Image 1 (tube, rainbow, N blue to C red):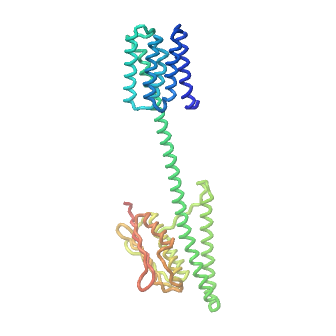
Image 2: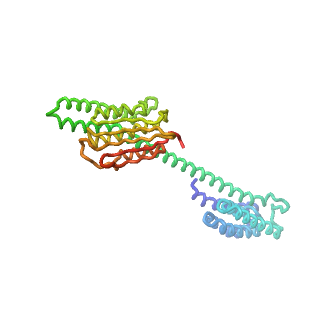
Image 3: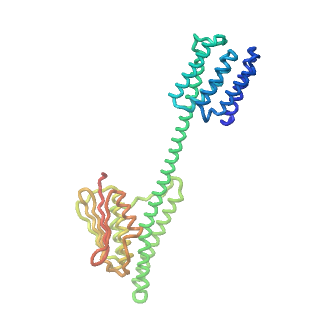
Length: 377
């Protein structure tokens, strides 16, 4: 039943009992007076939700008058019991306790003055205990509602937290996929672009070099297609047992990356210094991706024929990587430092607790330098 219906139904039931029970007890001469007093008290009950304490005062006054008229505590006290339940549901416990105490005292002294009231024994606390029980019932209902509301709020916060966590993971996965696509496919596309330009430039004078460029284009495009196929497979597969899994590249793969850049026309030197040792795989993958992006930028902005030096130094607590080109290749000079690639490099380095420096060299060229810790803080 709807709560609004209960608000209207309870006063009607109480009014019927207040009128009917005295008549059943043989108090017909007081029925009309009881009707007026009972109607006033029950009408006040309609406002008990909005003004619980004033309604208690009104119903208590009507009940005391009814007791004096009918010489019966019950059913006139039903109005007061309903009002006390609402007081217990709506007000603080200290207010409920004070209101209950005042109500009990008022009923006690009224009965004590009107000795002719039937069915009420002042030496027993059982009947006065009904008023305490009504207040306690109201407090119990309020506590239950508060508990349910807090449980629902916790459930809502938990659901919101799960949604926020799911959104965060989706965002992180999208960023990871974007980084992988940019690092791998971007490198292949850059090689294809440079070799296509080289082939177009020497097509009439050096057929052999054209064939070499076309072969590099074929290899780079095949690699890009394979990476796209793998990425699409990851996005489409929902069963973790059937996900295509390949080991992430690491430090051992940097030399192959350098060889590929040399085949693309760059003159790349690769120097490793310091005592070589095992490093966490995530660090090795980060170094590999930094070298890959730096060589891609060298291909795009310095062009074939540029001199590039890749230097990897093993330090006591980390790695120092630098990739420098002299900008002396065949490509037209272009601005670096604001693209997605450099932002991706910075994000990768910061994710493992390192620092990245990028900038133009003098008199020409570009430099990427990173310090990456090999021990977790």
